[in-house]
Length: 354
Image (cartoon, rainbow, N blue to C red; front, side, top):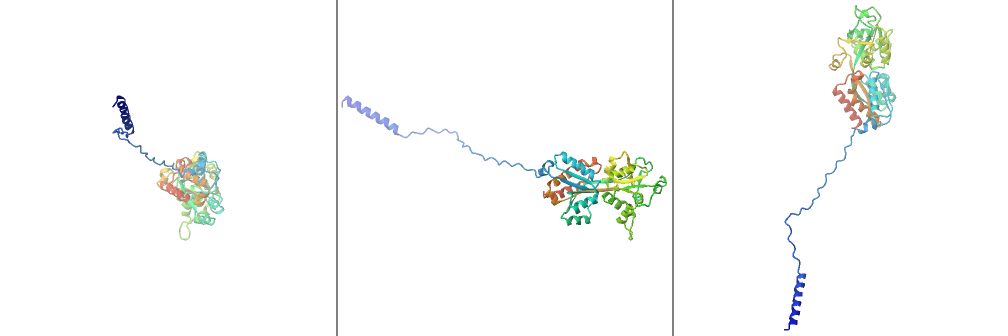
């Protein structure tokens, strides 16, 4: 074989080997032994929706519309204070607080249907509940405090500091007409009587607690109707639903005597003197422990339909109950027992469906 042919064969073989190498499957490089961790997407926890405060709708600045309250002259200064605070907290509607007496307040609420809230220094009577039912209202009772009834004389009076309930009863039923009949050491001067009018819950309470035990019926039992008749028939007695009128009358004579809610005494104690009754002075401790004999509950009343249709009324009552204990002593009254105030809040919750 010639040299040229051998050279050609060598080239052909070499090219064949190159082509064979190019056509062979590639050998995969060894895989690194490090573990390959696939990213697993962890589902995000659902974000809790912000909890809506169910009471936000009853905030003073969240309600509009007018509110009308009327009734007891005793509850008046407390309701007036709460109304002022409600407005300070953002309520922009009109709120009316009328001092017309508990009986007149129930008449406006239960008969005329003109008010949203009745203020009362006594519990509602069955006859008043019936009047409410006749116009489609069911009164809900809210206890808001306690009043110690103050029996007062002028600061000029220097001879009496304490009376028994019996002595009071005889004065206000007309059995005693001069001070020396009460006590021989007292001056022989005519007793000048000042009393709330018959529309006042204060009048009702005083007659029941003080006068009626001395005005007995044929069965020998205390008779409230006879007590009212005796007090209203006192010659020369002055009556007014406005406690400020009574204050002015009593302070004007050392021989005058009257009674009204403790708050009015606190406001005028420079001109008046509160008497101890049965040797007990009206104060928080003696009211709470029941030893002061002329203490009574204070209420406001409304209706579930009113509170539902007028959220501003529900808001005001909620505000009242939530804040009353922070203000009641400054006004001149005493806090209601804790269980009574809680019962009032429970009644609000039921009435509003919350």
